Image (cartoon, rainbow, N blue to C red; front, side, top):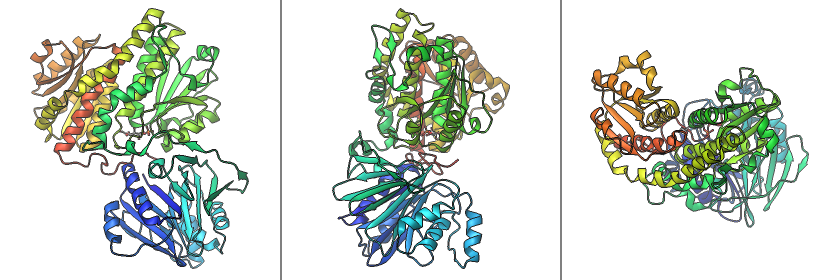
Length: 608
Ligand code: F6R
């Protein structure tokens, strides 16, 4: 979604801002803009389209200034257009502002400002805030921002500069992340650290309802109601290399191939294989508290929600604890029942998903213990939960989530082992699970070697417009995830179903033009899945099967097979999802789609 970069220091701001915008491209956007403060003016350059377009637009004009702000916009109020792009200015061009989030009472404020004679140029909610700051600005930018923000309802992460105050940049947030980079005689402000990491590893994560003034290489942090705060400085763990494609054509492919490593990172230091136990110290729960849990609710969106479904199957089977999996957007509005023995886990790669964050706050408000499974260190969800587990997967840049999913599954397997050993799982079963888990990275690497084979299958089916994904038990959520991957990056219609549900409707769609991708592993539901495959065959449908190594028999019933190594049923999604990620990737590539930044999608969905 929208991205913010700000710079103030002793270097020319333009190249730093434009490079920062490029680093934020992965978030998904439709227009880009920049404002530079110089010689008593704020000079704004903006246009719809990509950052490269902005580069071309500004290539011939001078771009002086040591202070500036920049933005990538993902349209909410008003179509993608030059005029609706950020930065927005007040009508006297004295201040410029970039905004992430939504001003909910913008219509009321806009009417009021129009009556006062303010002329609006855009259709956006954001311009209202820029005009409001302009209205209150009389030389003290912090005061004007504070006053304007006291009147707005909704969410914001903002960066503001003023024409006659070249040494000042103001940022503030509520519900939309902002991070400040502390460099040598320079400061940066951004909506995520990827725009900062090339310049400094020292960062401050701004908290909700905080405001920061960046001035003369120093910063001053207060609450919106002006109470002084001493922010904590953190060190970024990842470096700029993590933001490069490393020889792969797309970030998505790089991230698929990183999985043997990222899965290892997710379990590093967390398995005691000889004891058959897992340790997740970040949960901040003692033995007694873990023993007393009698219900778990997982709350998440999208791919993270699919991981949660696998978690439900594992935990219920191996620990006996009842588990519910909720869409974050539904959970928060339906008055869920929570008691003191209910543990709520929010799962989020970005740690910034608005619906998941709101659900977290709702659960905490109801007195639940809320824990997180997040990838982004220092993200809002990671900070607002009472404890949790980091994925340590490194930045995920491809919009379609891949490595985060398998890391989430790894953590959920560890959680199952941890809770299970206190209940139903014996020492020897624990050892079997721990060892099987340790074996997964090697098995994933083996599947990745079939990339060319999967690419050939993708070539055959790349021009098909409808797909069905079917699986049972642990591999039903994988069917959902495979279908999601395909539709988001290739714009091909795909539906995931529990294999048996096919008979209750989707079977009507099956013909020679609607291939089915079927997860048919040698597990307790294998025979049932084979019957489902026969039903597809009987209707002339084509089948691509994901099958267990050694299962030669299946070749009789299906058109293509992708074999994966054998593991425990509970861990099989960690392997079976890999071919589906590659299949989606190659189909999208054959169709010429923009794989890392699919249309309409955003990496981190920070609006409801
Ligand atoms: C799918 C995808 C989305 C996210 C969802 C939740 O590939 O990326 O469905 O999984 O928006 O995002 P997080 O996990 O960041 O909360």
